[in-house]
Image (cartoon, rainbow, N blue to C red):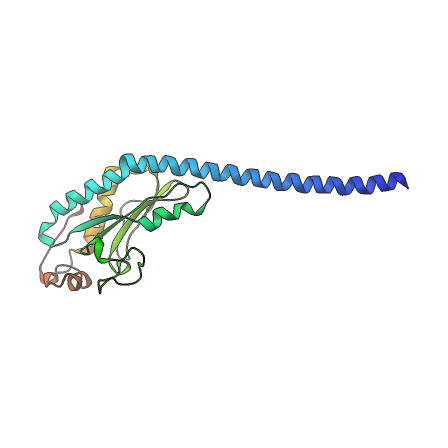
Length: 209
């Protein structure tokens, strides 16, 4: 009886130990994966601050100097709501996201409500824009509006992002806004600007940027 008693309780204890070990191993794996994501994100953010963000700002400035006849003015905005999100994981650093839009000053859109208007202005969600940002896995994503055909991959490792690729993205965006086959600005942008510039013939060449 004593041997059977000891065997049964020993088996129970062994199961409990195995379950505990399995739980601890799973937690350790999660911690390791999270730390790896944090390292990748931090590396991408350093690359973003050192190269990618300056590339974007430089390309937008150059683009505005080259498209003066279109009446367009590209703007950049660092999305604070995305930065505050911080990847959604404990210890994850804030993830920067740059929004490149056209024709609507930043102060005309409420940052607290992207889907609502501010004093009658067009909501930012209705304004064509390109978004370039750091993902939780350390990659760089490029999100373009419908109708904008990107000539570069929409998802890249941070080390693969070059100044020429950023310029290509900006050129792709402007090409969409002022298509060669139409006269002037897209109607929705022209209405927002309150002008008749959509009637003006314009032709852009991507490689000029």
